[in-house]
Image (cartoon, rainbow, N blue to C red; front, side, top):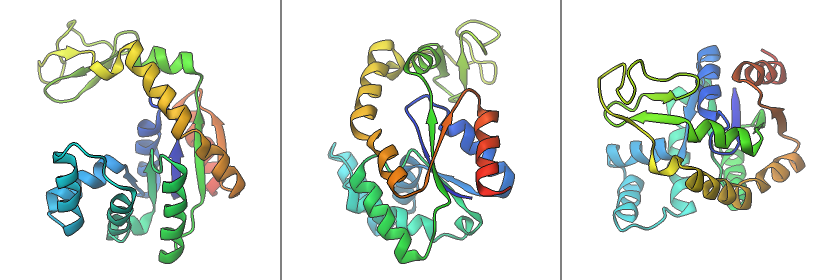
Length: 213
């Protein structure tokens, strides 16, 4: 599969990506992942990205696209890739289109996970994370066996600062302003697959049908 996964924070992009990679060996790629990998590998672009991040600056689109280009050339991408939450803006989408054309790679679709705002707010405000191992819980659907304590490692399970109602509302506003226009961009490109993401299984079944698996 060669897909872009679009959707607001909490729409379930990461969960769907993991389910899809298990089907055909595609790799899940996010901006954060490729930046961290490039920094760790000490590549020339990675060093530039690290310098920008240490200075508290945003990593430029040109730099991100350069690192994305390096990542897509790696052997594991031959089986396919799922771009999780990237691109985030129209300029990034246009740059990605040019990059893929140069590489001779054709996208199979841009999947928009459509989830109502109130559902996302409920999902994320009830989410809790272990400060030690990163395990994720939900106080409604998947609470730790002992309140405030991780089942896996015994670490403290807390609500992240960016998952309060106020913080999430702000993140959703930024998404709607910057990223939501990508739905229109990919619709014009004839690549949009818009799915009412009622459950991860529904999304995965729709994607499998779309790509012919």
